[in-house]
Image 1 (cartoon, helix red, strand yellow):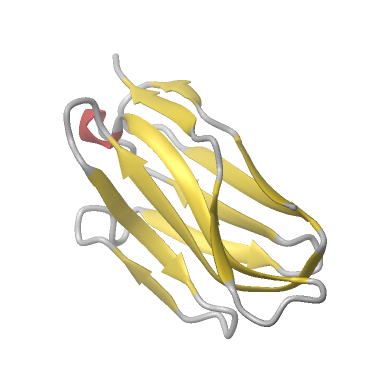
Image 2: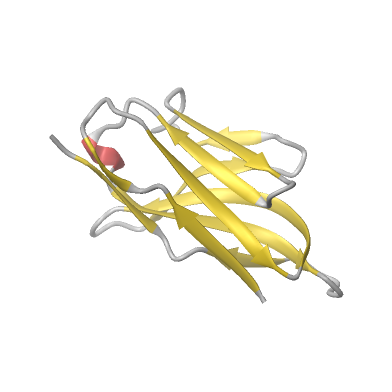
Length: 121
């Protein structure tokens, strides 16, 4: 089994920063692309940032220049550094990863349980 566990959410004021972490654990052979999504109240789930195994990154237009995604493959962990936070960034943030389990032949997508980020004065 594979588990993804997010941490780092919380309540911050507009303009402040926050860093989210997501660690994958279990019988893992390879972790491929890792992603951050978010879901605001009453809205659908939105792709925020992507990082490939090769280190290529992509961001939603709404967070470009403010958010940075990175990864530590030795720890199977992905990070999301969020700067200049705005009230509209308020959402539950989820990590997602394509994982090849030990002894398996194909990658499977896994999700974390989500962590709440609230930006409010």
